[in-house]
Length: 317
Image 1 (tube, rainbow, N blue to C red):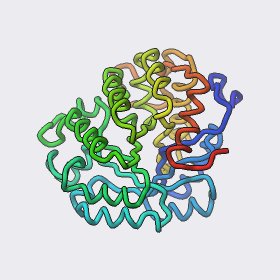
Image 2 (tube, one colour):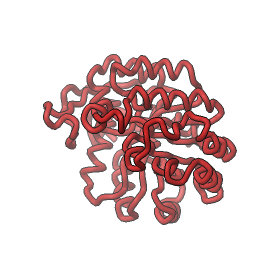
Image 3 (cartoon, rainbow, N blue to C red):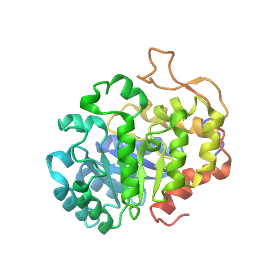
């Protein structure tokens, strides 16, 4: 692995806990890039039955599979239909379920921010189904601070990030028997939000987080690498590596850049190195720079391999 990049320090297998599958040809490219960066296993969030069938037959033993639900479905189909789809997931070969329910999904459904809150009584049938199915739930509910400052400025339409985080914490507190993987560092990699995320970790034992997406993590955690390093080291048993790569394009630089930036962030001691792809949120303010966290090997072993195997109850090597 050192031959790939001299700043990489981790030489053992890596598990990517957050990838998406859309196009079979693009999945082939993603797998080639994964192997290049030491990824031996991954969660594949399947956007169609066909992509799961292709991945299972072409790459046996490489993936565990998540059934994908758009966040619009809770508004267009309702919680009882969602519950039926979730209960069918294990028989369909899925190991977990994933919902993308960021504010943009509410907007697409033209739903009020207070409508069908995930921590409300009306959504309880969906969570009862997850509990009955006995599978983990990957949840994406909030977005970067930069989105709320630029894309979600109409608070009557989108709400606020504080509203979304309150809803997310409400889900964790209301459903302690469900194992949650809260995507994107639980939407709180911003340095000023780490104290609140620490409080969640100390209060709720039923969730882990993943490190997707690469540009968001690199942008925010690099702003105070010492503080970020201390946080990831303290809660190293609750964090899983994830790239959020989506198999949809034949542009190899898309996959390369995301794997490279995350490994540099977590393993290296580099300073002020430009993100190897464009960050739209900082394009007009100097771009995103990576400051490596230089995590200890024992911490990396947990984040890269041990935690996902324990969380998904998988046999390890």
